[in-house]
Image: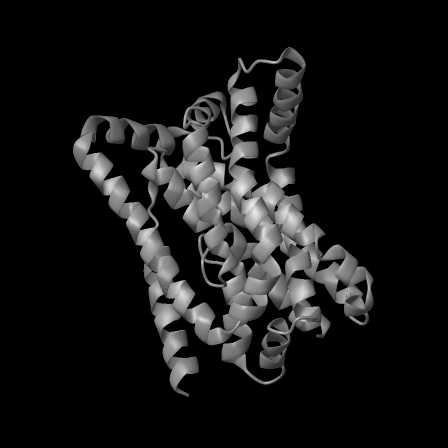
Length: 308
């Protein structure tokens, strides 16, 4: 891997991880479409001891750092609420309730990630599989939009009011009203949303996308569904990246540590931009363009790598 490739992969990781498009799928598909030395990187990713896989997963630390930086005030409130609730032995505020919901949601995806992450990445980090799962990702996103439209038909006045509030909101961070809605989803829904993120172990299925759809099916607005996905993703992505730090410090990191630093810097910068753009976009717009893109690029990739 050279520095130019590290920069490009850093951009892919920063943008596609924070939009509902699967960074892992695109770090497989885009180099495969380019071919040449880029395709060799992907062939490494399916190996048990892969420097490229360690590099890509290591960039997750940069994604997590960006998510924590962007929502630093909110994370301060959540961490404070978590320890306050323990000290008082009761949950009384929205911050405390939301902190525990994130803990509950992290349990299923965290356990499955620890058990299956490496196996799934080596088995399915191939262009044909990534293309197929990216098309599935598009179907999942369309399912989320189906639930949104059903809710609009069932409760048109409430839906119109939510859309107006989202359009009028000036902040892209989490205000008190947004926190109150997020804290109201309940432990069962939080657990289900966390479990749904396990689908992102398949290259091509978006972590943020499936979490958003989970939030939409439980009555959250698109913007708040994205916010919950971001809050839930930070500890999960951080853990996934942290697991690869020993690899990067060991023999797998030989010759690419400089590239990891450069790629991480690029990933942090692009992630911060992507978080802000996604938060603004989903105030008034839908998942449909991302669904259509996922299906078209996924099917094209299946045809490209399955037939030729």
